[in-house]
Length: 292
Image: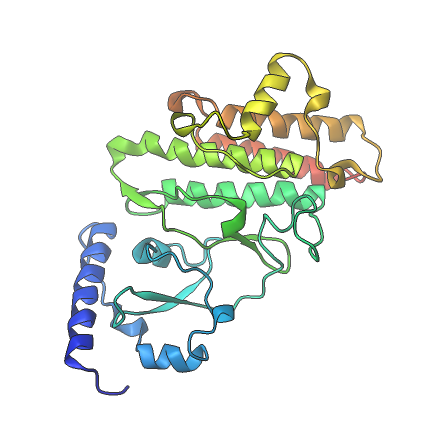
């Protein structure tokens, strides 16, 4: 590693202190030495062909490193290191063979990507719920992801979802545990997107704008006024196969779960464990349905 300039050393030390503070906070007072996965900016410049845009996955200047590190191996893109001697720390991820983002694979919005079959859609929803449940049940501190959206969910070669963007994530106290119902809301939106193939142009009710089209409002209005035929399914979900009684039940259960997850009031939304169990039942039914 080449000798650093004094100004680079100052930036490195500042970022190291910030990293240690965040690590200690997340790990409940236990410290962690970040030096084992440090890269220099010279090493990254060489490895990425002078930061070729094809090598840069996300550039928003606000990535939560510690939360990302804790997610390794839990449907999250594996973080292998970090560069701290740049003004904004740079995260280094493992090489990953992607079959597109979730947004690429729903509907016909992105040329060159095959739409997802029904079984895979249910499986994706189940895996995403598993990730949210992990944040709730397995980490030393509660974590709210806060940024689940089709464009930030990569799919691997087997169409298993991989989380990438933790820029909106935050650590909360046990007293704030109900805040994780915001992630339940996001799961509900993704279920509706998987069902209809439409874009998720939505946000929690408190932030809504009357000028935007909101998928969840459209679906709720159709259900309330018994205009279910107006809830357009993504054609790939039903095309070429008979809509059996079993398949119709899976679609209905998927829709009902999404509507429960997107209820206006936090406390009326199901717990993530309940969401996980119900998605597991729907997935099992889809796997056993030869017409899917």
